[in-house]
Amino acid sequence: MLYEPKFYKCGVCDAILESITPHCCDDLTCCGKPMELLKANELIALEEKHLPIVKREGNNLTVCVGRVLHPMSKEHSIQWIEVKSKYLEQRITLKKGDDPIATFEVPENVPVTVYSYCNLHGLWKTMS
Ligand SMILES: [Fe+2]
Image (cartoon, rainbow, N blue to C red):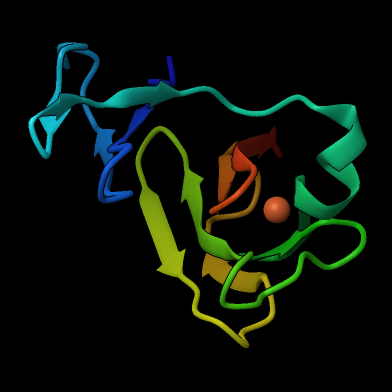
């Protein structure tokens, strides 16, 4: 069974930690304060610009964040895109001015969960 990772965010410095085992405790702290457990977003009103859209061609898996491309400004941007399967995990960090698009190498027919993180609107995920 695919382990569902947990993502935690520091409300002070905006650091994000990901637990990669199911045994992570939920009382993580950063900057002297408890970290917030992030939940994948399901706000339909924001989905058009945030939900990762997955396109597969052979072993190439391309992720485009949003049916309408998400903004990539200094104030509002997709910070990273991550692809996770039972045996692999790949993450690409984006910066201001990049398109919110990333290509990963994933064997075809391997099911994946894809995450994207917006600095203002949080964590999003889709399965492919
Ligand atoms: Fe956003």
